[in-house]
Each structure stands twice: as structure tokens, then as C-alpha cells.
Image 1 (cartoon, helix red, strand yellow):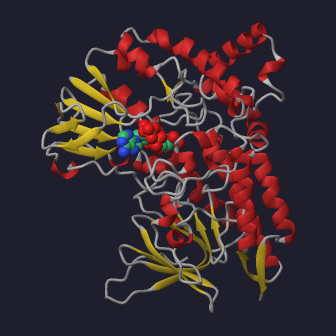
Image 2 (cartoon, protein in one colour; image 1 turned 120 degrees about the horizontal axis):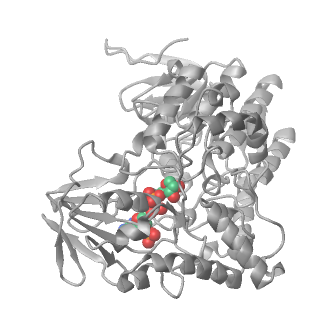
Image 3 (cartoon, protein in one colour; image 1 turned 90 degrees about the vertical axis):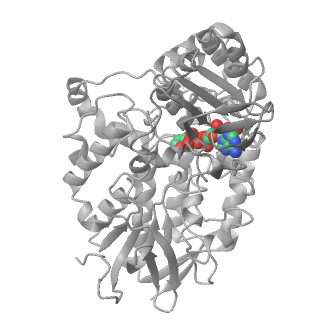
Length: 545
Ligand code: NA7
């Protein structure tokens, strides 16, 4: 197998693969593993210096997954047999070591080129090839292209006035420095999503003064972290095969599903008993294993919020902070922004060394050399400012690759008025290109590894079919894209999700079209839809050899 390194004599050399995969997170790793099983010559280009995708980049303090073990891992027995986790919700450092174990077990790295940021992709229609270039001059071409580029790759740097003037340490959470200046110093954290919550929990404990800038208070759920023993995992492994298979039959991939019916089928006492039980289970049990009418019925939604507020409010002794973080009226409908999982977030925010700035009441006017001035005219001074402001989620990794289809249009141009895909997997104008964990698939509403495996298995079956049936290429039809998009938006419009500004809706990035970016029907139904299309290639233009 050739290795795709640049030649030093000034002449570029192009390696040719059956399949080139962009990204070596869970999606890229599983794609490589499955394609090798087919006997294909597959290779990965990865921007980072090792496997792990988002876990490679997420070096901010307290970075931790909020899907629980045993669900958050690969399902291959050869991987899980020799691996045990130390915590129910593993931290980033442990996940990095896990990827080393995965690499060691599956020998993935030999087919990965690291530090290879793809910055140009073009379609050579006459030769039925994709041509791919990286920033550091590597070139390759392939018959099938898999974009496993992740949903949280391109950082969202808000355009705060005079941000460049700040002379202290200014960092984005996903490019966190090895030596952050946060111990015993004055720190600002901007943001209260999953990352803001995790950063706040760590920095509040070591900074002399922490100011958290919050535009929308999060409705965070208790993680209920706990250590896991090697013994309990070893003895539970007899159930793993069944458990991982079961996860793919659920909506979210977390191994538990919501009950059918409505929460109003229960009387007050029954509901309270169920909700106490789900709450005590921690993690996403309270929303994912609950009746789902809270996502469509404002009354059910309000009840969920009340329950959450009853549990959370008393944890804040500072009444002003309590009124902002746990207001009487929900800041947004429960579940319409992603709930973060927290350990002691509210206790941290309650500390005397922690201030909160309510950005709706007092927006950031400008940065200065030494801090931030709000609309109230007050300058707050900081040594370090952490932007926990999230990502151009779901689409940013795809639109920033300069990927041109057979008509010469980039994905950015193609999606300027909104995303169009067939099955959240293929794009009109881009034959033989497949997306993994991208937009218009169940992506953000799932446990990543479970959904990724299920989706990659479909992609690999598509490639298998093309090869066995003498098909040169398939390309999504525009009409199928329009229908797929419409079905997603129709389903979305029956819920409360469109009422809230969230990255599910693309609403966190100024100018990004506002639309639901995820398929709402869950993993199981999504895979049924994809496999039906696989059967007769409906919605695709098929070109035979
Ligand atoms: P999120 O969930 O997008 O959170 C970003 C936070 O930053 C959120 O509180 C935003 O407030 C805030 N934000 C974003 N832009 C601004 C501006 N311009 N001004 C003030 N505040 C701003 O990103 P995370 O990194 O926390 O999490 C991303 C996902 O990655 C996570 O859910 C996991 O799936 C992994 P807002 O809520 O928009 O008012």
C-alpha cells in the first residue's frame, strides 16, 4: 500500500485509492475498518496529528463525553474485550488513550496520513475520480470519497468589536493552549453550552476570579458521574453484543427508548414517580427515556421545565444568580437546545469568586487591551478570555473544504440558501461522495458511535452494491434532495424545535440559513429509509460501467 507523503523534489505525486476518507474520528476509523473488510484500498486524510477527531482537538479543561459507558464506544468485540473504562462519562484524556487502543487493535494508523488538512477537492467526471489536495501539498485521487469530517470541527469565533486588541490570553475552547493562564488569575468564559459548562466547572476552582458571560442560560442535567470498575465491566461483557445491537434499534442509540403514549396518560403521582426515577438515573435519561410529548406540547414541556427547576433552583444560594439561571419562565422550551450534562456547575456558578454577566441585558460592547466593556460601560479586566462559543456545527467542516462537484460548485455555494442532501448522505453534483455524521441525518440527536456505525454500514453497503452490480457512479437527484429536506422540515415544524435559536437550527451562526439540520425520526427509522433506497437506488441517478 503506498503512503501519501509529499515528495521533496518539487514534483507532486498522486496516490490513488478506491476510497479516500476525510477525518479520523469515530466515523473515519469505522469506515476504514469496514472498507478493509471489503478488501478495498482505503486511506484516510486527517487534519490532526492522531486519531480521535473532536477528541483530538478538545483540549479545554474538563472536556468529557456526555454519552455514557457502555454505549459510547465501538461495538467490535476485539476492541471492547480488552478495554475497560474508569468512569461512566470518560474524560478526554481517557478517550485519547482509547483511540490508541483502537489503533493498536485494528492497526488503523498505517492507512492514515496525519497533519493532512484537506483544502481542495475536485471532481474529475471523465475519469470518475475525486481529486483531493491537502494544505501541505499532498495529492490523492479516489473512486469513492467519504467525508467523515464531524459536526463540531469549525470553531465559531464571534465577531466581537476590537477582539484583536486584547493583550491577555484569548483562546477558543477547541484550540486550548497547553499552558493556560487560569490558575489564580482573572478569567472570562463566554458561553454556556456543553463546553462552557465543562470549562466553568474546572476554571471556577482555580481562578481567583471567574466571570461567565451567558447569553442563554443552559438547562443542564445532572451527569451523576461515577467510577467504573474493571470487575463490573468484565462481568457485564456477556451482554455487550446484544446491547450494541439493541442500541442501533433505538432512536438515540443510548440503549433506552422513550415510552409510547403521552405523559398525560399518567396521573400526577405516577408521573412524579417516573420522573424521579429517570432523574436519579442521571445523564440523558430524564429527556431521552421520558415521554416525548414535551417536544411537541407546550404544556408537557412546561411541566418538564418545572421539574428541572424544582431540582436545580435550591442548589443556588445566591438568589440573584438563581433568578437568572433558573428563572420562573423557561429561557427556551426544554429540549429545544441541547441539554448539557453537569457535575457541580451550579455550585461553581454560586461561588463568591464567580460572577455572571447576562448578555441579553448587558451585551459585550467591545474588547480592550485588558478586558471587556459591556453596554453598562463597565470594563472588566481579565488575564485570560475563553471563547466557549461553539462551532459552525453540522455543516462547517464540509463547507470549508473547498469541495467542488462536477458542475464546479463548492458545497458552500450549493448550500448558500440551505442544506440539500439525499438521505443526509449524498449530494447532487457530487457522484460517489458519501457523508458520515453530517447534516440531515440523525447526527446531533444520537449517541455518536452507535449512529456512526449504523450509517457507515449503510455507506459501505452502497459501495459494495456499486461494485458488484457494475455501477460506475450514483448521484443524488435534486428532486430527492428537495423531498428529503421537506420531510425533515415538516417533521420539525410539528415540534417546538423551530421556536428556539439553536445550532440544531443553524441559528448560532450569523447569516446561516435557519432550518432544522437533523433528521428527527431516530436511528432505526433512518436506517430503514436508507436501506430502502439502497434496494432500488431510488432518488439516485445511476450510471453503469
Ligand atoms: P454550543 O452548544 O454552540 O454553545 C455555545 C455557547 O456560546 C452558547 O452558550 C452560546 O449562546 C454562546 N455564544 C455563541 N456565540 C455567542 C456570541 N456571539 N455572544 C455570546 N455568546 C455566544 O457549543 P459547545 O462548544 O458548548 O457545544 C457544542 C457541542 O459539541 C455540544 O453540544 C456537544 O455535542 C459537542 P446561545 O446559547 O447561542 O445564546
